[in-house]
Each structure stands twice: as structure tokens, then as C-alpha cells.
Amino acid sequence: MATPLRPTPLRGRVALVTGVSRPGGIAVTVAERLHHLGAVVVATGWPAHDDEMPWETGKLGALPFRVDQHDLKSAAAASSLIDDVFERHGRCDIVVATHARSSSGTLAEVTAEELDSCWAVNVRSIVMLAQRFAARHVPSEPTAPPQGRLIWFTSGQHLGPMDGELAYAISKGALEQMTLSLSAALSSARIVANCINPGPVDTGYATGATHAAVAEMFPDGRWGSADDVANLVAFLVSDEGAWIRGQVLNSEGGFRR
Image (cartoon, rainbow, N blue to C red; front, side, top):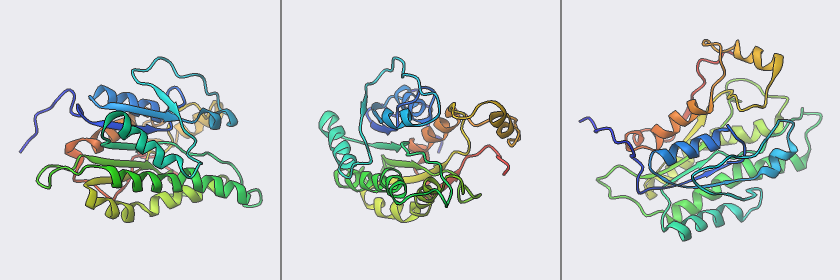
């Protein structure tokens, strides 16, 4: 039976979005989309990491929600973040974990410290978010579509090597591999979990000849956009998306390696 379209299908739900620190980035675009769909959005980022990167960051403009700062490299940060959402709003229905630690380095260059940092931010924090989310989430009725959602992101390293970003690629590989197991672990709390591989997304980190060369690797001659990612997230967190769970979704626009 078809479900009537609703302009604000997420009204009454609370969504946590991490990684909100760059204008035009995936995280801020996802957060704005969920807000427009009716969700109460709790946003957080860690701009100190962007300040270490070679790309131009810029400042976030005016947003219809506040953006806090949490360093998810800290072992306790993920759990306390979930607790903060519950303390402020009494519930949490959706967690979109968009944060990541970027890292360049070959096998000869990678260090134990960088491996540990990528593991802590990119993998451990997701597991800790899932653990606390499951512990505090109030399950929906068994006869209703589950309202709990957890989404995280991998980076396509399972489709082609990324040996120039070794610590990053290894941690992102763990995110892909843990999807089925973590999804099963969350099911008893009526939380649907999935992992997205968005492919190359034009968030400003590539310019010039590199940008043009990557664009040519897409059938449509353009990079993926943050809106392309938000489109998929919006469906997955909707009631209509509840039947998709435990999947790694390669949403790459036909990207040809």
C-alpha cells in the first residue's frame, strides 16, 4: 500500500549529525536536509581537524540549528554526546555519523600514532555511538516501522586500493566490514543500521587538473555532490527506508576506477 507523501516526514524525531564543520560538506548538507524534513537536529563538528588539512575550510554560515564541538578521538566523547542529546531533547531517533579523520601516507610513511588516531576517530567512535544509542533508544512498537537509524560512511577502499592514504583506508575498511555485525547487534533495539560509500564527493578538497580528471571518471562528467548523499540519507532514515538494513550502499554515480 502506498504511503502518502508528507512534507515533513521526520517531524517529532531527533537527529544527531556529526562532522558538521565545513561549508558545503556532506555533514552540513545532511543536517540541513533532515531539518527541512522536520527533524530536530543536533549537530557537532571538530573544525580543529579541518584546520590541519590542506583544503580551504571557511566558516559555517547561519544555520537553523546550533553546531557544537566534540573531539571524537576521545574515548568518552561518543557516549557523552548521545547522553547530551537525550538530556536536551528526551530522545534520539537518528544518528548520522559523518565525521572522519583524513590522513595521507604510504606504507613507508604511516606511523603507529596515525593508525591509532584513525582507528579512534573513524571506527571506535562509531561503535561507542552505537552502544550508547542502543542502550538509551526507546524502541518503537513491533508492529510499527522501526524509527531508530544509525548511518556511517566508508570510502570505496573495498572497490579499489587507496595505498596513498593507508591509515585512513584501513580504518574505513573496518567500517565496511563491521556493517552486518553491528546492524544485527542493533536490531533488538529497533535501530536500523547501514553504511554508505558515497564515492568522490565535491566538497572542495580537490582543485584544478585533479578535479577535472576525477570528473571525467564519472559517466555524467561531474563529481558527486553533498546533495546526492543527502538524498540517500533522507530515504534511509524515512519510514519507507526501514526495509534496508545491514547494507554497504555504493552510491557512486557509476564512478569508473
